[in-house]
Amino acid sequence: MLLYSSLSSLLLFLLLAVAFKFLLQTRTKHKNLPPSPPSLPILGHLHLIKKPLHRTFHHFSQKYVEECFTKNDIVLANHPRLLSCKHLGYNHTTMTAASYGDHWRNLRRISALEIFSTNRLNMFLGIRRDEVKHLLRKLSRNSCQGFAKVELKSMLLELTFNIIMRMVAGKRYYGEDVKDEEEARQFKGIMKEIVEGGGASNAQELVPLLRWIDHGRLEKRLKKLANKTDAFLQGLIDEKRMTLEWAMSNLLNHSEVLKKARVELDNQIGQEKLLNELDVSKLHYLQNIISETLRLHPAVPLLLPHMSSEDCTIGGYNVPRETNVIG
Figure 1 (cartoon, rainbow, N blue to C red):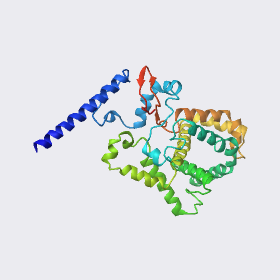
Figure 2 (figure 1 turned 60 degrees about the vertical axis):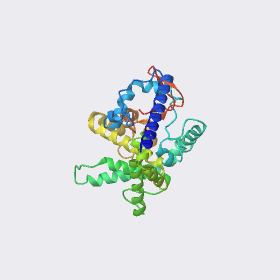
Figure 3 (figure 1 turned 45 degrees about the vertical axis):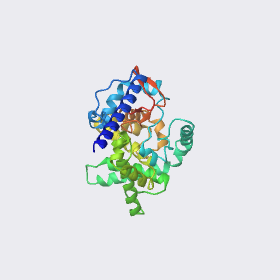
Figure 4 (figure 1 turned 180 degrees about the vertical axis):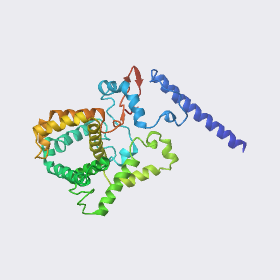
C-alpha cells in the first residue's frame, strides 16, 4: 500500500513538472501574447463566454477583424482540424474545410467556373423562376380572404431547399409536387442532424478532453451522419434563407424603402410581367437594398473558423502558430 502511494505521488509530481515546463517554454517563446482573463484548469475561459455565443465572438472581432484578414490574411487562411470537417467534409478536402494551398485554390477555381459563373447560373433560371411562382401562389392562397398572417421563415427555407435540390437532383422535397414523401422525410431529418451535430459550436470541438469523457460518441455520430449526406449543402441553404428572411423583415420595417422599390419595379418592369433575374441590372435601387441587407445581416453570424499557419502579430500581440481564430 505504501509503495502504491509513493508511485502515485511520484507520477503526479512528474506530470506537474512536465506541465510546468511546457507552460514555461510556451510563455518564454511567446512573450507578448494577447491579454487574457484568469482561466480555470481544463475549462479554460469557457465559463466567461456569454450566450448567445455568436454575439460574444462578434463583439470581440470588431477591434481586430481588419488586421486579421488584411495584414494576416494568408497566415489565417487555414481552418482548424474539427471532427465535423473530418467526417462531414471528406477528411478536410472540401472548399470550406481545406487549408490554404494548391488543393484549395483548385477547388475555388472550379467552383467559380462550373457552379457560380453567369452561364451556369443562367442554366437554372427556369428552376428559380418556377419555385418563386410556387411561393407566390401559396402566399396568394393564404391571403385570398383578405389580410392574413404568414410565417415567412419556413416558406423561404422551403424555397431555398427546393431550388438547390432541383439543381442537384431534380426533386422537390418541400411543399407541393413532392413525389416521394418518405425520401423527403429522410432528407429533412438528415439536414436537422447536420445542424445539431456539426461545427465549431460543439463544445467537444473546442475542448478535446470532452471527447474522451464522452467516450467518442460524438465521433461515432458524425461517422454515421457522414454516410447519409453532404455537409456543404446545409451551409448553402442557410445562406440563402437567412438573407431572404432579413431582406423581407427590413423592407416591412421600412415602408418608405419598400415604396421606393415598388415604384422602381413599376417604372422599369411594369405590373404585367414577372420580374426576371436578368432585369435586376436595371433596378439600381433594388441592388442597393440587397447590398445593404448583406452588409447589415451577413448570411451567417460568424465566419468559418480560421487557424494560423505560422506565428503572426495582431493588435501588437504575438499570436502563436495553430491558434484558432473565430470572428
